[in-house]
Length: 489
Ligand SMILES: [Zn+2]
Ligand SMILES: [Zn+2]
Ligand SMILES: [Zn+2]
Image 1 (cartoon, rainbow, N blue to C red):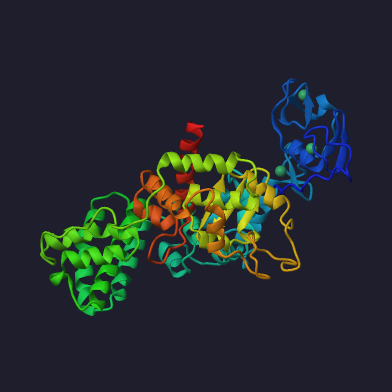
Image 2: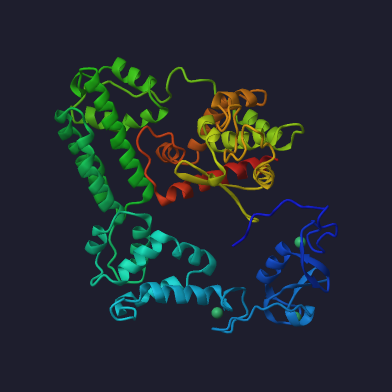
């Protein structure tokens, strides 16, 4: 696994690395000069075809081209003692794939017999041949995954029903998917089953029991009937259907609190409800139309497409201008830069940014990712730069008030993070954070359904479930958003 790079230290290591030119400890002396630990690691991972025709690890550099051990005269141990492959070694003289293979054999062996039960052999094969053995190994060595697989190895019978009995977790869904993919379990429409289970519980959240029947009918005759016409439920359909029912429940509970019901609904009720809540209340439109059609609500009512009285939105051009100045302008504090990027590109709220700790931030040579609530966002170049610089020197602003604080944005009060209002105030000279956030959300809604955006960015009024694809959705958005940004600059 890649380690985050430490800051250079020219005093301690006056001679720079022959490859990256940075001042780090020299760990090897190769024909092209003294090599730092980072470049050494990278050399062992460089693969391809050498000019001599040899295919494998190419640690050398010959006239700018990677070259093999024989051609470069570089000696590194990259021969796996188990499979003999020329590969980066993980441990015990074995390559990552071989270590992964041994780990899988160990985890999936039935403790009673010491061997893998024949029914699990396809799963074992699938796990062993994961495309990237290093991420496979990282995944499989997590405590909950290890525990899950050991448990599975001791399970006498593998059926969908026995899986349903296990606690709901991403690991369960992932392994079920693998077993299905490899024919151990028959295919079934997981999202439809999850939706049905969810929908059976949802009416319980209505404060007035008289509304439960209405919601049940809405679920059955609107959502489930539509799903019956689909071969397989997509995640988008699943999330939207949940969101639409959730918003409908929210509306009904609001009406109950105001001593009224759907049959007595007026436009004023709707406007009030919409104005005092998040913009996602717009999603109630489907429910309203259905209710009018089925005569559960008076006709002639409508949900307004945009909530009244919202703050002004920063237009797209001003948004890009702000982002450009944040990335390029001189004299902006790195911390302000880092925070501004999360607001401008991902529409994040100052409250969530102020609370970030270094545990939420991962910086590797390839990627900077930040965990915000339930989503993990990756920052592409050049948006990662302020974060890399902060991470390289996190203790830069350590003072007596913060002798060893883990906050990314430290506050004035000892041991506390920055006050969100103070952060907003600091960024004010760059742009209005609220207008920027609304502008970003507005742009993002053009890229994906609002229900999914709301869920992914934490704007949903309801509990946000930890779906594995939340991050995938956010990821797709950032790619589109940054692509738009790069295309323009
Ligand atoms: Zn180097
Ligand atoms: Zn060669
Ligand atoms: Zn091997």
